[in-house]
Length: 158
Image (tube, rainbow, N blue to C red; front, side, top):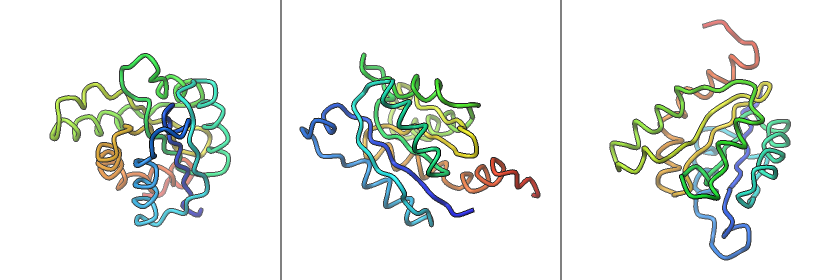
């Protein structure tokens, strides 16, 4: 299967056009460098129902769905809740790995609540909204993503 990806930016201010999305384009470039074709990019407000609906659509069109933003502890950060609602299974170790790596840079990494899960044969990954944190988190898990996608597609030969 072709490596396809979607990047969803979750940010009220970017959605309203008040702040430039710096994380989404940065993640798109990382994915392209890793051989992924970007099939969807979208900016959404911090609204759980809209995020959940967008995740379902993106997972039907891309094998790897990234979100950036909405993973912190502010009242409007609801990306992990929306992700859990639509995922079939969670891969807790992926979030743990991102936070462990983030702790090497900042103690605030423990405040990130991003999760990783599956929707059918697609993988969904929540990344921080901070551009550097998002890129760092993606790069630490990227080596395992093609294998995870193979397993989801039923390719179990090792």
